[in-house]
Amino acid sequence: MIKTSIRILGFLSICLLLVTAPRQYARAQEVIASYQTFYDQLAPYGQWVTDPQYGDVWVPNAEPGFRPYATNGHWAMTDYGNTWVSDDPYGWAVYHYGRWTYNPYYGWVWIPGSEWAPAWVSWRSGEGFYGWAPMGPGYEAGGSYAYPDNYWIFVGPENLYRSNVYSYYDNSRNYYFIQHTGYMHEMYEGNGMRYNYGPRPEMIERETHQPVQVYRISNAREVGGSRISGNSVSIYRPAINPASERTSRPANAIRATQPIGRPQEISRGGEKEQPAFRQEIQRQTPQTRFQNNNANPGEHEQNMNNQPANNGTRQQHFQQNNPSTRSQQYNSREPQYNNQPARQQPEPSQQQNHQQGGNNQQQMNRPQQGQQQRPQQTSRPQPQKETNRK
Image (cartoon, rainbow, N blue to C red; front, side, top):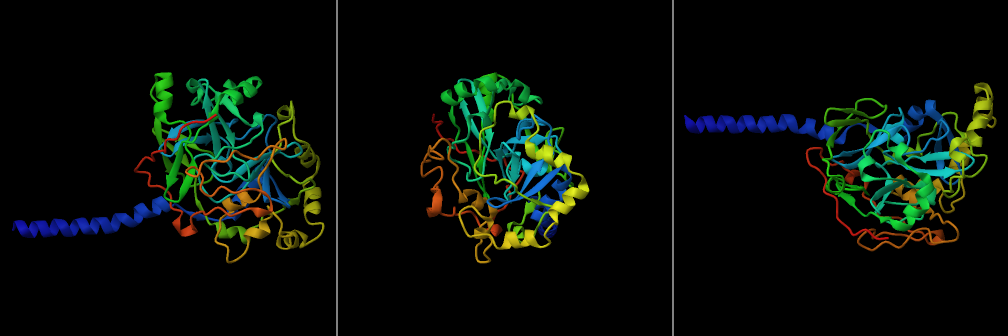
């Protein structure tokens, strides 16, 4: 009788595993989306622009003073690390995929990407402050970067997780902070993911003598801003098929009248004014914009399919036999500022596949599409500890 009961219990356990395992796997993989999701969902909130170097990029209809990872959102510590919780309806996309760059004519520009992360930023620390800056095109996680000084935002640890964190930023001290802080190399690597983790909870707790709440990330069912409820942060985070970039196109994208080029410094007072591009868009009627976008039917498609194969163009990454994701395109050109090297040479342990700019570029060995699995939410990633360097 006892043996029979044991057999029955064992059989029921196996059945339970078979029933629940596919559901857990589905939640881990979430939904599959394409680049067309970016193009369609972000269109009401900005203008898509076709740039000869970066391809289709997005310029938000943002108010003067807008900054990515600064306005209309805040930081929260989650089981994936420091996560940007955005109030913007498009925040699910532009703060968790792709890269940002700044051009005085366009303002802040978002370049789509297929890899998800809690935030694509670089981190610095020192003098009792923490700083972060949006990662630009040409950069991957784990290195040291030559961003313009005024890309960085610095606050004290006691203010890092405040809902109005940007109001504690003093831009007049940026040069001082740049000179007295070093890059943080706290990384998360695993399950096909690699991103900058930022300060660990124990670091903030040690400096503030206050506990840091760690939220669990849950998967939102619909696009929109992030939401905190109880001990979880709800974010829409589909798995983007990188191959879909070849067949997806934004509707009513306009050709760039000026090339975006490398990231440039934010002009003094520039954040308090609407960029010239945004002012021109606002002056045009919808009918005028439609005529401009379709003045030469088929030209947009022709431009995208027949671009010269030079450094930094999308054409290099659209070869059928190239399994690379768009994240490799970010490495296609190394930005430089003031004729200085684009970035400091990271140690081999930090970025084994570091590349040089120019025509001798090399593709980073990124995981194949089938290997890019999301980490299970039931376990908390442990960042790799590395020594800060100045």
